Image (cartoon, rainbow, N blue to C red; front, top):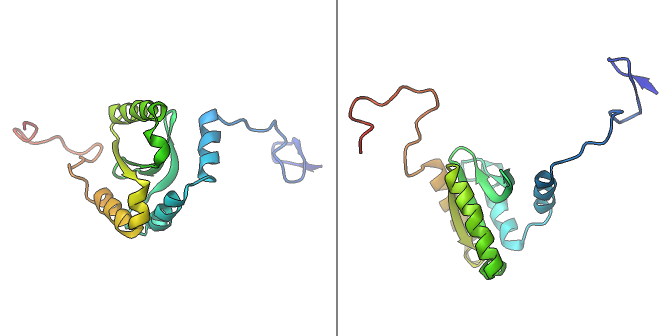
Length: 153
């Protein structure tokens, strides 16, 4: 047994405390990261490591939902839709997910898996471009307020 800085004994290679329990959503997101579909793998190979100039995450947890791909700089969620997304149950679940994400300020883009299979490079490039140059200017947090008249549209 090794004594830690706190004076408590710890076993070799462990923290000595009870095993960490994960929130069910976190465990699910980790499981999904290991189980990407073929179109998702193709897209991830092109989005990872800032290959598009923008950082993306795969299977990112947002509230109770897991986004297929996510760019935090643009608050952009990318959902890859395969055949299963055409079932009535899945359509209902996807609508609830989209509603939650939109209410919380996220932009959602849905892409059919067949489009990724056709040209994964073009799909990834378009997502990278959109994430790098969002359609609407996002003011910096804590930045100056708009000048008189600028806040009116």
